[in-house]
Image (tube, rainbow, N blue to C red; front, side):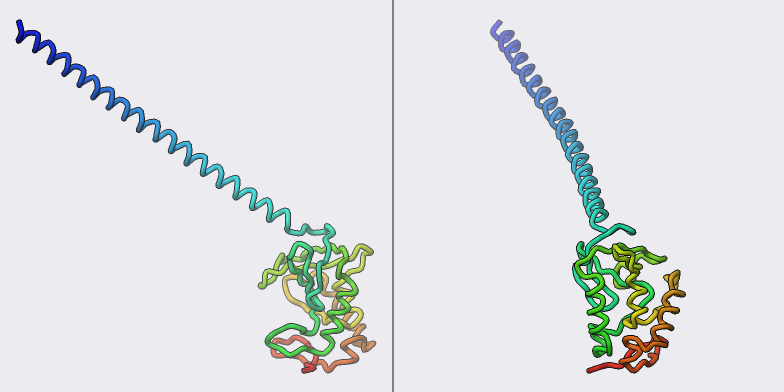
Length: 214
């Protein structure tokens, strides 16, 4: 009888042990599944957050890039044919070229200061709008544009008409070039601006330029 009771007791202990092991195994299985689910959800959440952040950055860039044919303020004038807009973008006038003022490869050229000053009188601190031709930017990542004041003044053309800039034909952005060439011809004949005050030569690339003053 005593042996029988010991056997029964041992069976209960073994059964309890097996139940405990099964319970632990089941808990571990549940834990692993739960961990996988949580990890998966966190990864999914990370992916969605990354996509939202990327979208916000793209929208921010779009919102700060000036739109064509909409007015924007000119922060400052860089030289006779380049300006900085209020959003920090630089814009190069299409179809014209003024004497070099800050080119590190060249000395200051005749009428460079005058062209820069004229550009300031025309646009600095004012609202302008601009349109592109074919290319949106040049190799320096400056915006390219035909620039207009609120009163309708076509700034690119005005710089050529008054003798502050050369006509500069640079394909494929040449839709207005006939106007620039005609304005340059008249300014040359009347000896306006650089045509009367500077010595004009043709450089190795075929572009006309003024003499250096340094």
